[in-house]
Length: 218
Image (cartoon, rainbow, N blue to C red):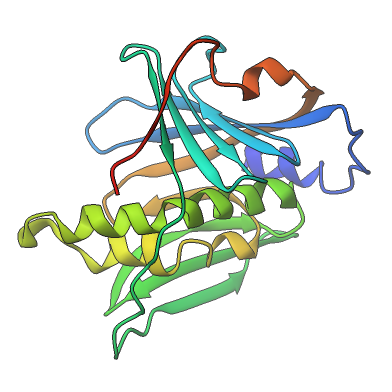
């Protein structure tokens, strides 16, 4: 609740100066593992996702160029992902999005396929709207790759919810607003911690000098 109130207090923030960037912090957790910090930095041109360490690995979305770059210092390379073709939704594909009003300025949602809740949580309609758009853009760029991973996985671990969350409905819940909390069908959770405006640091949105950029296998 404290996180909700913090964010709701930011809903009236005015126009961001061109030299600013939005910083979002979430606490994420995978089943059986300890929670960890996730930092998201957003500008009109880029979005960076990392663990809060300026010098660590990160994922960079080039919003103008529509590509995603996974920078891995340990491997000494940057893997580049570009949009591909996503197969059409099959006949009978009917996801159900349920949206209910929650605390002021927020909505509770659930996205289900064949009676299974794939994603559920709370979204703030007016908070950091460009950040929510950037999150959806990243999912859109990666959708074709995510489909190939699903297609090539053993049938026993293929799940329709992966297709919903990552391939065919990747931006559906983000259209409702910035996620404050979210729980996926796998048990993975994300909890909003803070939002702030920081001075723009262009060096955080560049591939390290000398690091080769390699196109991801298609």
